[in-house]
Image (cartoon, rainbow, N blue to C red):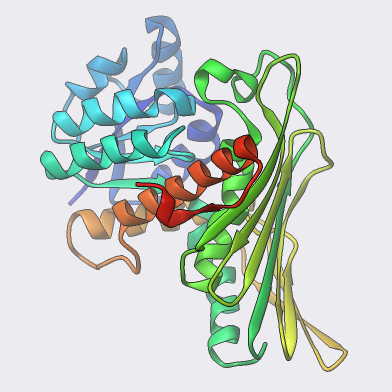
Length: 330
């Protein structure tokens, strides 16, 4: 049984991550390619060996089971809802939306038309995080008190979609969402409050730096991101008996052997994790869930809403300059 996917958006992430993972699999195929212009869709489809191409509506009307949406964040809601109305499942690039209200609209449409949606945080499927959780479950770190995550990179030029306000640009949606999501995975719970500071670029009027403090029941997390930084993609978990550091936590090349640095009693052990394609593992999980071969370890739709709610709290906190409690948002 094959999951037939249509691409909505001829993006770099689709070409560099999704398409190689699909070609590596024997259970997913790319059956349609959609772009704003017919010429780009034609060229893109030729490069990846797909015969059907056109605009976004053409993709939704084609013979597919699912769409992969890799448009700018500000366009996700419109096309996710259109896909749901057509009875299609949805793989949606992060961040799935630019507001909590938008996220609720998408999920309501998916429920109404009985379709599924997964927000594409592919990093969460990398086995290094499972190993971290195993060490925590074995009490190797003792009581967990703190998570610190960083994800940033040099600033793109001002014409890049990441810096377009009208398209949902900004570092919170683009990068800080990763360590925020990672803290939820590692703590296996949701924060109760958020305090953030988003620094705006005066020229393009979007956030280029984000500092987000997450209050959990008996522990804390801190997420830091910036467009104006040297590349950094890590997190640290600090417990009463030990701590763990991952230096390549989010953006992991397929051929990259990751390392977990586990420190306890002044001794640091390096735990090596074999190279994997985390995008392939994400697609495999989605495929198994859609065709009910194997149930996922988390609920796709609930997770999307929880993540969107935290980002909403971060935006409100920075604007109002105060702690926003999650139960204040509905």
